[in-house]
Length: 240
Image (tube, rainbow, N blue to C red; front, side, top):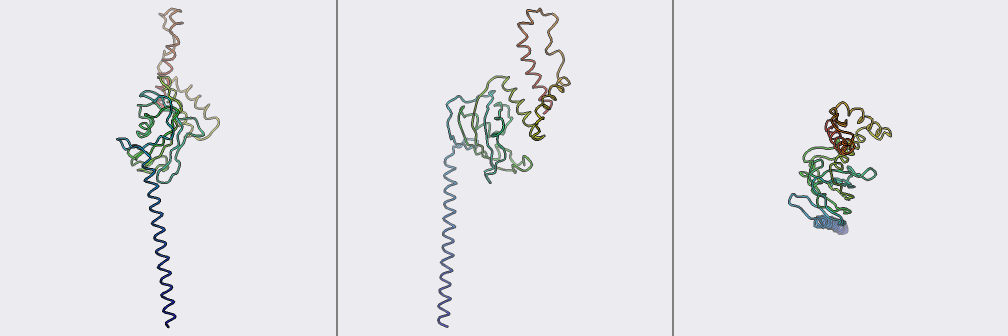
């Protein structure tokens, strides 16, 4: 009986030691994980809006201004899971005009202070992203914090650059909705060329009968550029 009692005491001590070791190990993992998270958060700067950013490479070019077109590569992931929900790598770089609210507020704010050639990581809170909406058929759940890795490739200025960016994004969205069909790009061009006359006003590119040949020669390039830009914007606005 005494041997049995001693055996029970011994086993109890071993069990207690194992439980204590497990608790200590678990606590150490939690502390280490928390430390890593805090260290990562501390490496980011925070703006007044709540956007956090970290410059991985500071570019040596200029920063974009309102009305400029930013051309960038990006990768977007969910902070909660690390899952990639969208990226430009493997496709054409993404372009957007600053000040037009065509991207989420956190992304525009983060890009606005970058310099060309720079790389930056953003942590965007839900209220500067998509808020309480599900986006992309559930790829971005409601109230998701987003992480964007950005590379600012180029800055373009002028109305023509803005129109080109709008056209490019329209075509990319169209391609994404239809799928990877090798003939889709030509289909888009065909639709733009055939649908355009239906929506666009008449007498855009013709010469006025009251102008001379010299006037036509001097004025045509400017008229064509202005008309093409305005017509394309009008068409894209109607198709969106």
